[in-house]
Amino acid sequence: TLVAAGLPLVAPYRFEMRTQLASLVDSSISELFAAQVSNLEKRTLKRLNAQLLKKLDKVPVEENPSENAAAIRAAMFSFDNIMSDLEVPSLSLTKAKPCRDMEAVLTEAVATFDDSPAAKIKRMKKVTQVTSKEKKPGQRSLDFGLDLVAVLRPDGYGSLQGFAGYQLGGNSITFGIHNDADDPATIAQFGGVRPPLLRIQPKLRVDVEM
Image 1: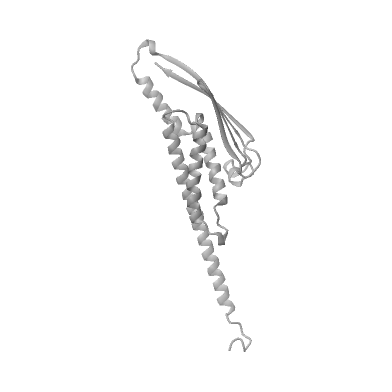
Image 2: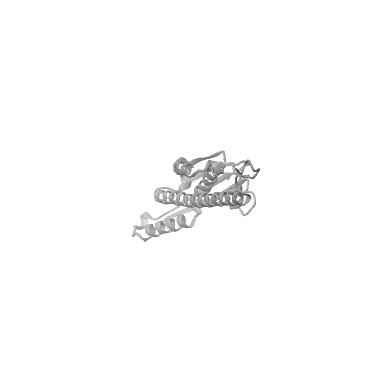
């Protein structure tokens, strides 16, 4: 026999081919996992933006911190469940990092939604509809409001996230915190540099009815 003769059971070239084949399979699985995660991220973000756009008919997104947080939690719950089915632990392809990255993206989307092109277009259409209606001279009005949004992003990898808001008359203040300044995904979003520790976005709102 081969063992009695002192020969290996598997020729070196066969062992090398098996190793290369296993490496190729692992690489293909990793690429497929990355593609599935990317598609899931796009679908999740698209659904959240659609929800925010729908709610914009009632009140600006920034004035609903509790609803915003609930929308993020619902989106993350669905994302987490689907990621559980995509995981391949034996290849270290787990949901931990994709979930952290997705939560950071959703948080950023909510914080900046009112300044997004879709939101601006919808508000413009709403203003056009209002101003196009015929009104009596006594019904004309001009109202001003100040919306202030502040986002604090301290050091960390996204383990802490939350929003709080306060509204007084036509003015509102929304404060958010997300400790993701050290997260590679966040740094990539800012062109390879860390995000600012505190970002404040004041916005003057003018409602005209004529």
